[in-house]
Length: 144
Figure 1: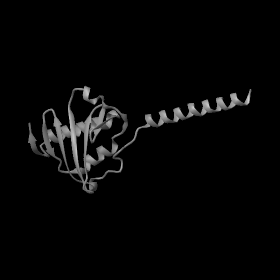
Figure 2: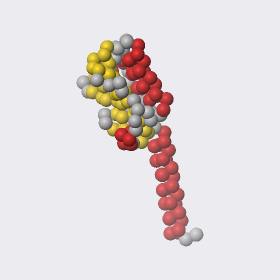
Figure 3: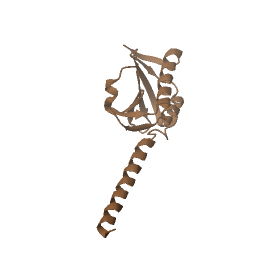
Figure 4: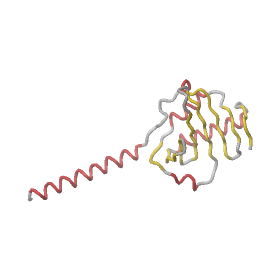
């Protein structure tokens, strides 16, 4: 084989390997709140739409656990084309910042940016919010 063809073949192999690594990392997903604890959350609310009700979350430990399990993949803005219930958690964090996380399966929307998500952890967040609504444990702070 000529020297030029070997270099071209080597470059082509490197490109294929690089694309494979990139694709594998995109499929692996990440957990943006994996280190979140109840101590990191000063206060939190959740808005369920429908029924357009906002609740104050009395104990943030369970919420922190659910959020720490959430897995996101690539960005995806197509959540705006879906219909269904969204539950939006507003977190007032101990460092003074605020974060907004909407569970809208199969999406997780973090501070206005949509991501595809792993089904089970996102569904657990929705179930948690609906459990708070039906249990009467959380204080209703707004109803639409």
